[in-house]
Image: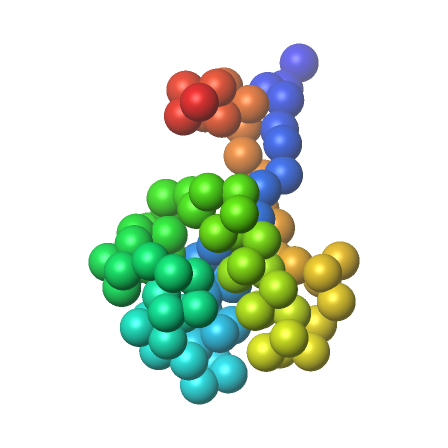
Amino acid sequence: MGAAVAMRVDWFRVIADLRRCGFCAQAVADVAGVGKATVIGWKQGAEPSHATGERLISFWSNSTGYARELLPMTEIEMSAFRARA
């Protein structure tokens, strides 16, 4: 039997999409209300808080023109997810 998987937002792709829309890391940080280093951390695998993530999702949707349902997602093994919690 395979490991259980869960879906999570692919923050790397969200930030890459925003970059393609012309927003630098500092602009994303300003919208999110965090420092530039925090945005770089998200791109490297860290997770924003729920409220900050919601701001980023809204910014991504408005900037790209994509509906929230098209938000980039990635699979994560549940054992890895539990280890991060």
